[in-house]
Length: 177
Image: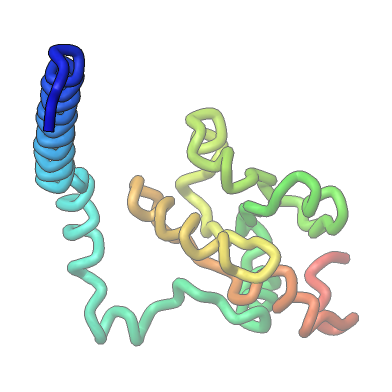
């Protein structure tokens, strides 16, 4: 086949373009591999993991079986009747709080997304029993665990939250006068 100088030049340019593209692809693959290996080497916060390990290492069968961390609604009502200074922390959203209020005088309304702001942590008493609650308990449990992790003592969760409290609500169980 007869090739013109122009055809040969185009073929050479195509070959160089393909070689350059292969080099780029190889370089991108190497960079991606290097990035992934560096990322996976530091995929977690070692200091935080160590702190969590020391927190959770105490959670063995015996202490967990004797835990009062989760308060059944009935037990919560009985406790508040004995000790009316118990502080509630409501971690529901402002919209939920506006719709259904507890009416309990020692309630701190701190939505979960604001709970760990310094101004809110400073409002939590350290000399009182604290009961954290939300609508159903889903947000209250991690909030209470995290409060314990940052150093608060005597933290409890109202099991099943407002839903649990509503399920036992009657004139006999009412904690407000």
